Length: 396
Image 1: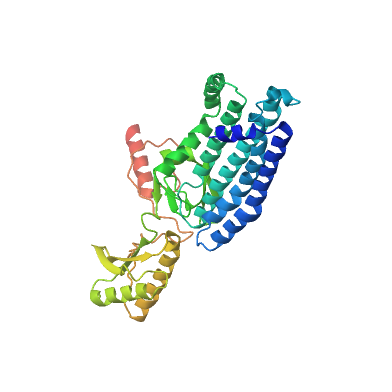
Image 2: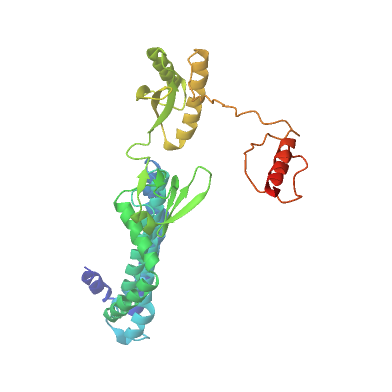
């Protein structure tokens, strides 16, 4: 493709060729900057998309620099008559052609990385997940690796030994940073499984719950209802049980248990409860709220009021307001809300003796020998007489 152009330039001397190529390169850069991109900016302003604005703004400088440096590279490859050149062909390659080519590669790598990262930011603002932000990190790594390989190939440096060394280094790094690597691939697995996206309300098997506010290369950040940031490693999320309450739809059904006394007009009660749900601003009119009789309880007929809210984060507040509305509505309608009651029967014990009064002691007749002269002074008289009579009989 360049052969006709190189053949045309070979007809000029070194000085004329240098002046011609540099003049054309400079003119091309000026035309791109002040004509082409000026028109392009006017065109993209009329479109409704912002992606074309990103592309035009990011490729502006790479194209201008490429036009300018392309002339230097073209001069080095068109020096067929090297004898008329002050420096050698090798010096031209080492100090002009190759540095210019490497600079062009680096500028375009930076521009491509910026285009994708800005596009990801725009996607995030629209609420879509697309390849955000994990893809942004992966893309940055790919661009850097590609730019490095191209730069080495421009200087004719063989990358095969480097790949072998990189494999050994990769094994060492893999063992040293296995947790980081596990988190990285865990994040990729979570993305491709479409487990959640930014803005979803998730509940983990550990009990933690919150809105996903950031998906990084190492971890995912949740914002709880208490305005607390919880950072969870992607490797743990990949192996955990996650409930995404924002998928497949963001609306969420809530259940409000309520009991009513036996003997209540159930049709009137159900109609009243459904009307309370319809009057509540946090609940949705479609699907329509409804009542369900769940069981015959010990002291009440146990119902559930089923209705929907637009997002999971409104569920707790909606339950609070529905409970309050049901309580007020049932009171106004004189419908009783039963509650457990217990009857306690008290049994009193025998009356205790008055203070200072000794309780009566039980007595028993016991035959015991009495020592001489040791008789009890309070012993009965007939007992003393009997003892004396026994003693008289013994002396006779």
